[in-house]
Image (cartoon, rainbow, N blue to C red; front, top):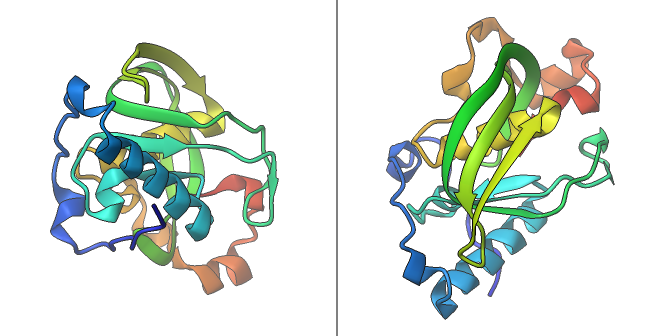
Length: 185
C-alpha cells in the first residue's frame, strides 16, 4: 500500500463517468487497499480530497478530509475523513459562493469557481452502509469539486470567467486572495 501517481488533465480517465462500486466489492482486500492508497496519495500530495479517477481507477469513490490548520489552506474548520462511494448529489441552497480552486490533476493553475452553497449527498461509506450528509460553505465546494471527478468533470469546466484562471505564481503575486479563499484538492 502506497501513494500512487496522480494522472493529469488530458488523460482520458479523467473525462469518463466512473463506474459504480458494487456493494460486494467494498469489503474485499483489493478495495480496502484502494482506500489506503487513495489516502496515502492525498497526504503525500498535500490535498484535502482525492477521487479514484485521479489515480487512474475509474470507480465512484472519493476521500475528503479538511485539516484544522495547514500551510497550504490556512485555518479551516476541520472535518472527519469522509469516504464517499456512489454519491447522489442534490442542491439544497442554489445561491452561489466562489472560491479559487486548484487540483492535483491540474497542477500549477488556479481558477475561480462559483458553486451552490449547500448540498445533500446520499452515498455509501467504507463499511457498505448507506449514509447521507448535508454540507455547506467551503466543505460544500470541496465535495462538489471531488464528486465532479466521478462524473468526468474538472474544476476548469466550471469556470465562467476564463480571465480568472491563473498560474500559481501569478495567482500568488497578483491576485491577493487569502489562503482560506482557495481550494487546492
